Image 1: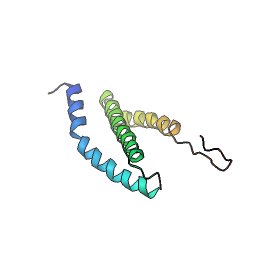
Image 2 (image 1 turned 45 degrees about the horizontal axis):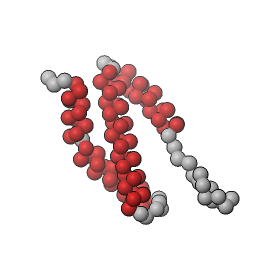
Image 3 (image 1 turned 120 degrees about the vertical axis):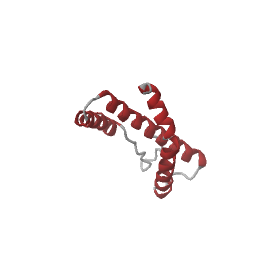
Image 4 (image 1 turned 30 degrees about the vertical axis):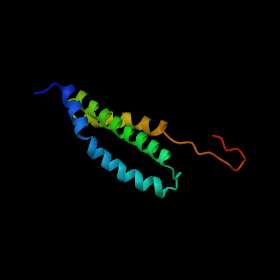
Length: 103
């Protein structure tokens, strides 16, 4: 049996390509269909933030699952952690109708 930390790192490294393919397919579709800026820099920054978020959320849920012994408790704790992430993470839409282009 390996140390839990080594197992978590190995799992994270082994899932890099799988998550990268899934995030890439999702981001290409979402980014270009939503009409965001068609510049390489803006697209890859979007990819970087989305990929980092996917890795962090996966690791967060893995830690919650490792800490709890029962699946029901881990699910409820994971849901309790997910709710503030959804509520307090968002985007701000800039209004240019008033003549200001700032946010």
